[in-house]
Image 1 (spheres, rainbow over the protein chains, first blue to last red):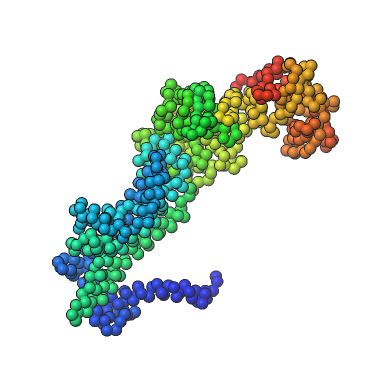
Image 2: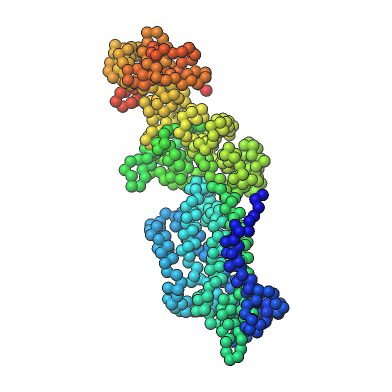
Length: 280
Length: 357
């Protein structure tokens, strides 16, 4: 075995530290009292208030109505993330299926039109989208939060490329085996796309989880608050002599990190498994 | 099991004036093994796919049994197809691959179980039933593809160059297996290949296609002994039949001024076809300059030129060859073709006899 020389890995180590230290500091600081953080700055050693801070963050009721707990915000974020990921996968897979396997006029044109919407991110069309939702009376609903952002050019593009790489003979074999369009999609294409689906799930879950602007606009009811808004609202209480609850903000930030990390870890394993096992 | 009949079948792709397949008439008897053979682009795969229902039929009629199937879906045609790249569902086990078609037809679990087990036994796939296709070798995958066809118990098997992805040795053994299996099941089969050797060994009858048209239909030996055109002559048989410009004078075929064999045909230019094995070295024959010799062990193929025209012959002796050899031909094995159209000229001296099976 080759002897590992620390110097060879200097850049890697520095890079890892650069990325990890802020996370560690957030985690450690969240276990100290707010007043200590305010006076002494960030900590890199664990404090003694951990359990109490996290319990408070998860269960104590805050906000104007006094109904918003950390747990509720976590649930809301989860609904957003999962709704986004699942909805986008379903919608873009079906769109790509239609584009690749059905012969209709202007299919290419439609595809490029979908692709061109990549140039129009949410922020560009946020006012019209808001107006549409408002007129449909979908403000302050999960539907309003999730549905307008489901159409995904990226997902459609990925699935289209993937479907095109599936050999035509599979479709022909399925046709001879008596599988209609729906059966072929469910029995053959969906299982074959597992790898692709997990990759897109990772991307889209994190995209949904991190949404800030759209929920901010769409929801005024505090019971729809997501974690991202919760963190912000904790730091907003800078009035009079009150010190913001830094420890709680850090605790929420740490909590907000856990699900995306879990998703990446779980799906990455499937992702790699899919990549190494598939052969065509 | 059923007979298959193709009547004036043709296919013209949209936007193309040229027909990809035209005027194909084939009557296939129940249980017959028919091989469609021809060079790439001759329309043989298109024709097969039209029978399968994967391509639309623009002219003519295809009947499977008594049913006109022109407008039917592939699943309703009661056929099974084996593809060149196997087209197994990669995410299903061997068992599920074979059962999928039956499941879709709503067969009962017991029937599926029984048929899959029977096919697995026949193809010696039993140890692999729970594996995924990627864990199988090429030959085994090919077997699974055949198993998938067998369990359906269709009216007809369609094979689309099923052996071309296998190595040469495996191809020979799989060829035998396909033949045995087909004989045993007695299912009408249509088989596409570009390999003339595969075609010769498998077929009950050959259909030689060229440019989307049928050149000749007949038993392998019939096609070999009496090719209907210069195309068939050069395509079937290895080494290929030598085709030479010659002419008939006084009841003799004259090749570069030398009389080769007597024929009953009026004087004039003809294309002369000579199979390598029908030529032998005889003193006083047509002189051929030897260019090179392919040594095959049991025999050797001598390539040479008569005048400026290339010719091949098979020689079984091992003696060193002089620079020029003199050739003679068996008169009954001399083939004449029309110099202009390339069609075969039947002459009285060559009765076609094919031994009955």
